[in-house]
Length: 406
Image (cartoon, rainbow, N blue to C red; front, side, top):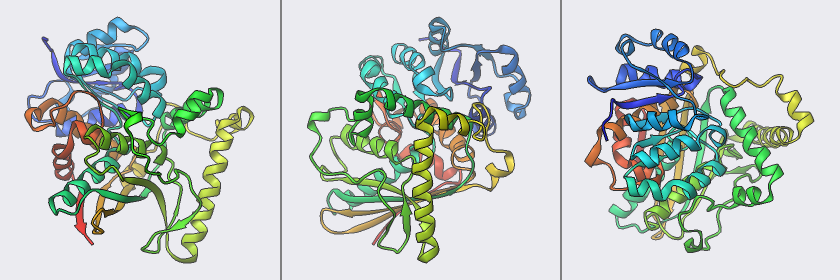
């Protein structure tokens, strides 16, 4: 395949697309051929003009997911497509298909279980045949979760401690929310509300498994349990991304022939602090999350929420993005009884500033790390497609990924 670029940023005029392009303009190695893609050449030119100087001669590609020919041409002309165009259930499948058939690597930021399942079912085989790596969830959802469990499993195996059994992630963060995230969540809730089959799939802890019938019968933690307290005394509430992140981690385990352990029980929660204040925060967050999701599922209440929630294409300002941060503490027990803790952390609003770093480095790994990457193709996860080369890149970019015993 003859390519004219190494990376195409599809959706470069969107909120996260602009952040990704800015990251690549600063951090991509000299000589990396990058193009900006979207529906409007004029808007692409305006975005390019506002990027750092390295981007000012980047070519512009007009492509629209509603025009399969334009998307196919975009995929055929590059080595990697990074797409920030969501909701992915609405706009993503034509891009996945084009990359799978062209042998072009693909990376997205989806947090949508139903979209990823459909992409797997429809295009995994074509991608394995063409050699394309289709890598979903390359942002805050689900890079820190996925890479942390990978590192824990490899450390335990190196120590002869056996497979992982109980693994619990506790997330803390400060940041904002964008209209695109709200729109994606709204779309999945609507699909689940109107379709019983979609509702059953979303509730399945192994919804993204490559072989559902082969999954062990190990009982998995609830995605949205009541407030609880960890062994360290931290009060927790449900983590809004747990129903997606946990499925990604379990898919990573299954794609590696359950190398983490067939008895792996994996759950995630949001940390709310210690003592009475932490308990009160956990109760308030649990109640608020349940009420918010219920309101988004009901058309009359959703209309009221739409007046106050950010619109698609908008997101937190520069001050919020720069002051944000994320930290994930992942406690693990192994078959031998040994315990480990992984830490994943970084500066910047997790959903946007930090996510731009994660997706940017994932894309650069796909474009430039070649033989260092795991020998896999098809519909993959960050851990199975990129593994430790991505960990190394993120550490170099200022993120923390550590594993300690005890």
